[in-house]
Length: 505
Ligand code: UN1
Image (cartoon, rainbow, N blue to C red; front, side, top):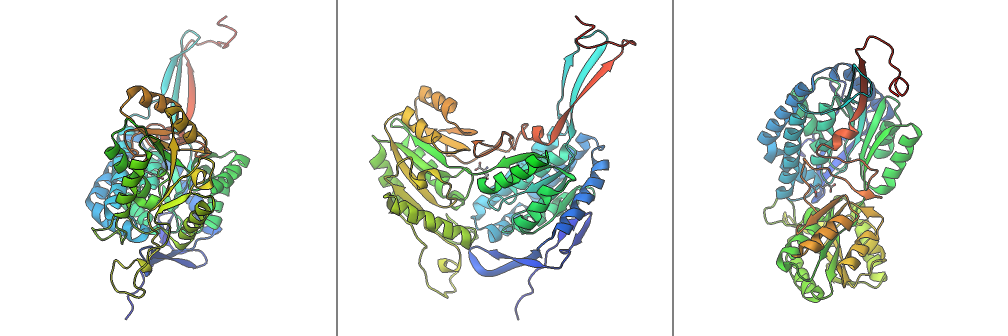
């Protein structure tokens, strides 16, 4: 007998419910696409409307709960996540594909964010200034924005929702949350954890479904005052336009084309490890993934040779297997896109030095490591890439690394800065002067010195410049600037009318 497929629901206004029209979609395992992990509501505009109204009602009370008390819920959330870390990592690996080592890291990022936000509940500092007038006091403090809409991607199914929900809730906002259709179960677990920790009804409303329906309805809903979106630059622009029309706050985290620069004085073994981890970790599906490697001409050939040899040894497989280094790509559409870019790279005249295709295997085999069952793609390295090629400028979001050559630090920086994106960058050098020039001049929101382009920490600002973002940051203290408004309060205790700019002259 076939096992029953688990049926999951939305969480709106304190109740678990189906989509208003009863429709559902399937969640499948990318390492074995025959395996259905559950069905989820394919929600409607009406569901979003109910969620937004529930969030609005909850906001009236939640904003008055003292911030340290809101923060203490996050401490409990962190404790529950610690206790359930392994279970969540397994759920995430099954629906997202990356190896357990990485899904544990994803959960850990959520735990770190929970404990960090718990402590921020006791700060949320404002700024007080002297008044220009006598017997008058000026205060400025943070107030919540209101109902926020959160639209998150599948590559960090736990970390990215927590980067938003935890600080946003501690700051006193309430949420309508639409997770990616590829990773709805991790989002469901996160919702359960917040409820178990004591988050009141209506503060978090989980609405599953398609971006074109649920995402669009969230973006357009008049009650929702701020939108946080992480995904492609193309979709981000649509979200931004809609928000602009409605004067809604919007925080965008979009594409990247991150480069690792290796100078001729670098510790090459370290730089090699960084390149392998940055390019092929998470199967290259991080916004921060290394998709360009800019090598100094003096070390280029030796480096490429070692890189290709080591990348060839990476083991593809189901992320649940301890022997797996690189999991599958998330879905068929993404894999087709990666194949398309490999074709483009070849047509542009770059040399495919490794991989470039779908790995073979025994069709119909019962071996759990059979790669034909999932959306696997070989780790791929292109050499002879020049800065204007499409594989050097466009985001691929897969295990494809483009290798470029430079003859100086200045040229490396120029190549790095020549793309439209600006999320992360990295430089390997032993020369402190070069490192400092790079830290200053690389046009990215994040720069790593002697470390890979990936690995942001929860308490530091995260985000990019140029087409990657719109000036906001997630993570750390900076995310509270997005989830709060400034309120300026003037307290006049002179007992008379004091006219600013007039009575003080
Ligand atoms: C992302 O790729 O969208 O810095 C997030 C990193 C991770 C988060 C990446 N901590 O690579």
